[in-house]
Image (cartoon, rainbow, N blue to C red; front, side, top):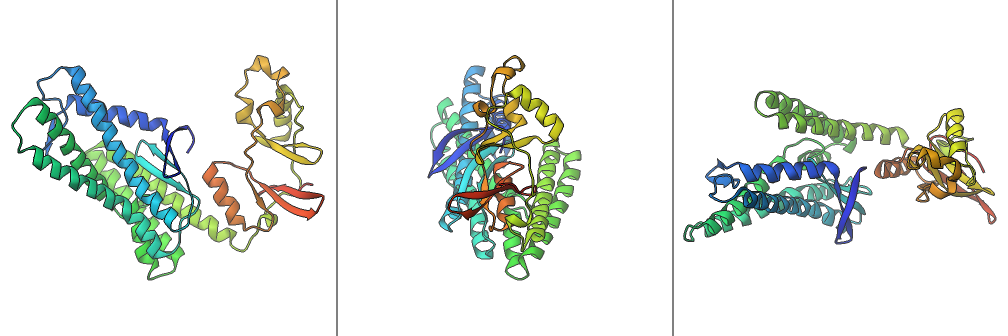
Length: 365
């Protein structure tokens, strides 16, 4: 996911935060600091406590961080099970709607998908139950400010973890319930048809949530948009995968593509982009691929320095590539996972060199 930064690693999986996560973290922290609302007898927020605002804010931040640690544990559950089945997890990213695990590929086996999907909500509900046990236990202690602070903290964690677990059981993509539904359907009907049905059900839930949100809570409208887009993307990815079936990378390459030399200045590269109408180019020297140069790297350099900066100084060297005989669907998955619009296709033609091309565009040597 773009606009995210790595904050650490857990069980070998990079943990990243998207900038929108900071917004929701601040919102939760401030809400916990100034409000005090009862849900099912549990007090959420420190607003009613007879303490200074600075302490309420501090406790609000602490509680919000603990809550999102629980979100990470939810995603770690998904990731652990995914890796257990032999599929690689690239990263876990926290963003405005919670967390998302970015997997290399997900199994189409219904039992595997069910296990991976259900473990997240199960962990959230389990954490909520543990927090509620502590809530009941601490409530038996003599009343004091310290006791109230702890009771509010564990009560808040209990409420939101159970809420997170139950919400994720809603049968709508891209949340866990949609994948649970698909695994149930796929055990009875063909996988593609199961995906189509589950996606349509997800869109239906999104529309229903949006209508409810208009009358009750604007956040539901935002969540509905997220769910609808997720369901649409799942359906679109299915259609692309079906379309690409039977094709290999070499079948979808463009025979001729434009490349740039590493010694071209960025000022020259600007004119080159305007004349060739592309936003990204392979950087070649003596028929060897050195990297990729795009408009993103170009814009990182100030205009006054572009005449003295060469392409090789700013090009991207993490080039995505597949073999020409690999399935075209593998190229699509790789490009989607890494948010790249182009990918190099390679094929060895002799012991002296390789054939290179660019997926969905390509072929040059």
